[in-house]
Length: 336
Image 1 (cartoon, one colour):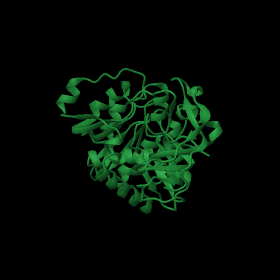
Image 2: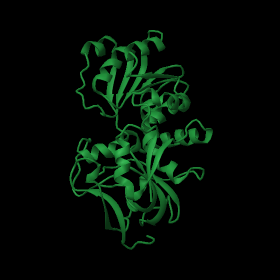
Image 3: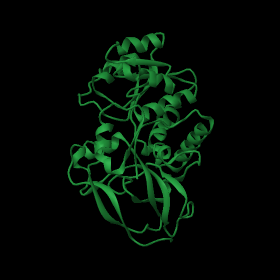
Image 4: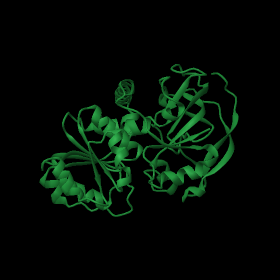
């Protein structure tokens, strides 16, 4: 083990659930990494909706206080455990999301994470881009490629299309030769979504979502839906799915109750599933395939991380407020 002494560093923590203001910056002692752990000097952190939901107590697991945040970060290896061989002190790395937020967290100046989540990223990526990479592209890959097995010419509806995962999904769908249909709430994001690769954009405040999907698909319906919203909008998209269509729910941004007509599912033999990125990122074989797909896409230019705004570490609360404002097109990043 190298550089194994304990060190003090600032982290983001919270002692109660609630609005972004519950987040505090505190200086704590960061331990030396265990045998299969890596300590990283963080340069950039990626924010995800999961972080906000965890902070609010609305995520798949409840925070154990004092709690920490963060699935994503990039930086420089500061110390390695005795059984770690794939990275060395001084390597430039990023973190793949594959752990419980109650066990590990990435939002701090110095972090300790499992060695299996640490990836040396291409030199062509900045720290900010690397910190925006794994959650969104691994999630998109997991639904579009790994699970749905999306093929050329199929129609894929992407809800919350301006989010980090939404934009990654647009690029991933295009990369496999399918047709991305982006859904957004306001017309102000249409141009950015088209620029990101969306073949069609549906604006929920102005258009009939069900009718538009059926028009775009010539009446056959969409083959796949990637939904991070739920609520009434999901109920409007379900009738526009194709026979044997696949619906993946990977978020619950809407506060509305989700009510879906059973006959809409039965009559088209739809597959409706929840999706968690850990399904792919925690499985060695599937994670490796995902990484290969992402690296190939980065090299070809088919995949390109899109960053909405960068905040300083001291402005972490403001970064969370921006994340939940729905103004952004792309990833929200915090730098140290």
